Length: 325
Image 1 (cartoon, rainbow, N blue to C red):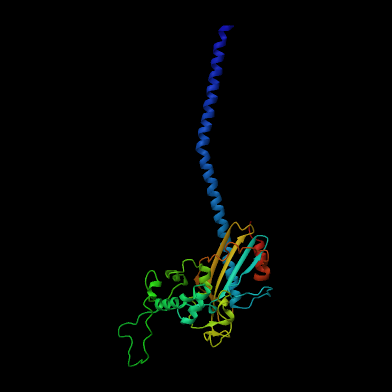
Image 2 (image 1 turned 90 degrees about the horizontal axis):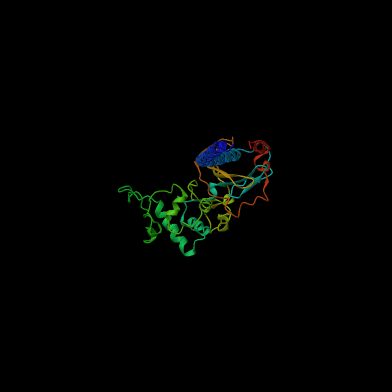
């Protein structure tokens, strides 16, 4: 009987070896597959987050359209919340979203390409520049935006008025890249000037505009930021302020950000629109805007936010509630 023992042990050894090889194979396969699975899961989460962000951006874009139409014509249904046009926040919340919108009538901002020195100085005061710098900055802006006359363009005999005074010699020192000698195309060009880098885009867009092409500003539409330094009514000290709105097409900047209730994700849409003069609801998009980050840290408390139906109407609110998860 002792002669049968060795073959049995050999079978056990072979079975054990085979099991060990299977385990090693499984470990090798796991080592190969695990990173692929983890990568696939990461890609899925990234794609899912991107899809959710795109959905939030689409909702924000739709709300921009709703507000643009209401600015271009009276709303079809009554609203409990006034549509403010002085960059004041309109905040609401529902079961799914936190929404903040800001609207600014461009006639309530300083037209950076046409404003006289006094208006520009007020704008720089609102940006909290030192008093000693505001006049120099205003002169630098005027020099920056002014085209030089072409040779032979001015006929002194036909136009006896003297040429405009040359800017101060050190005005050019305010601009890092030199004078443009052409109108501003965007208020962000102020970042070419020394001292502006620490000023947020939101502040610039609530003080200056390239869409106000006049030399005046409408007092009742002055932005809340500008109202810190300018009154809403004209006076001998502020002859460039208009007491009443002028007739004509009205141009507004609309910014909308939509966030999930937990605030983890958000989507933005914004535009500058010109409403039709006959208030038929038509409007033209003049410019698509970038996110001015108008929901900075410390300003995202929606505890006092109203129900979204009070701003956008019951129909829009119901559509938001019925959206996909």
